Length: 180
Length: 164
Image (cartoon, rainbow over all chains, first blue to last red; front, top):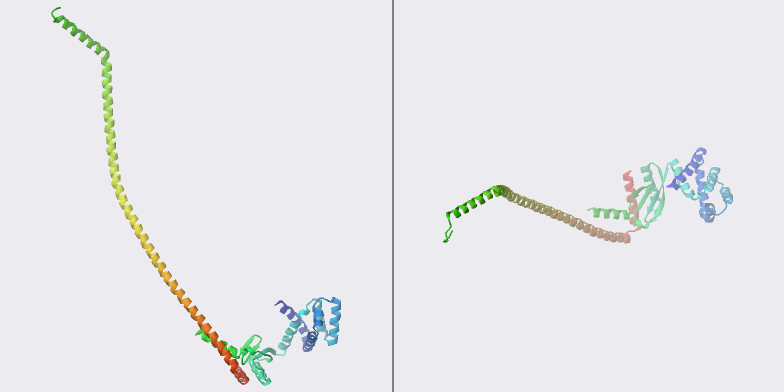
């Protein structure tokens, strides 16, 4: 809860700057590419996040990364601030919150589509279209294969769950029998 | 003075002698005798009066005790009656309480029985449903094909459409 609140503060700060200069999307892309570097080079991320190296050296290292990734100045400043305050561990959360802010700005919403079997794109698109009609927003679904569903699909968009899986049908059946 | 008989002068002398003796006795012992007898008379009289008083008191006391005895008998009767009434009331109270307790116990037993029977029924039902569902899940898993899955997704989309 506290980490969510801290992440929101940084994300909103950066987004306000991005909204002002119209480069909010660019900041998201840059943030994603920097995080990709951290994910690929785990040691690099650890060196920045853990206070093993001296602060001066960590700052130099971060500066090099920002330069190499051609990070916009407000983003580089935010990273620098996070490093100084030992809050580099919040960066993934900040990215998620920032991404939500960008989606909100562009009238988009993200969700998860759980499926028992691999799903063809056309079906995914049709589900997204139906959700768009329902929520009056563009919906982008991330597919996750979940064999426990047995068959069918389940959608989770911002906490709203629409479950059409066999598992759910069996659960409903079970509850109905027990109620009788 | 011979011949064994006394002269009349001797008799006179004896008589005078006796009279003198009586006179001396009356003179010197008359008053103490009189006082003694008066005292004696008074003492006896007092004793009689005291005895009479005591007798009266005893009679009064007897009457009082007789009255009290009579009252006591009455009191005993009343006390006996009160004790019997109390005992009867207590008996009735105990009987009522026992009946109420028995009724409560019966109710409790019925309730416990009903509850436990329901619990057992629910448990058995739950177990049966669980086993049935496990079997159903197993069967569905074995028989459900990808085509069935796609069909279900189609239905899901249609349902979502109809909800809009």
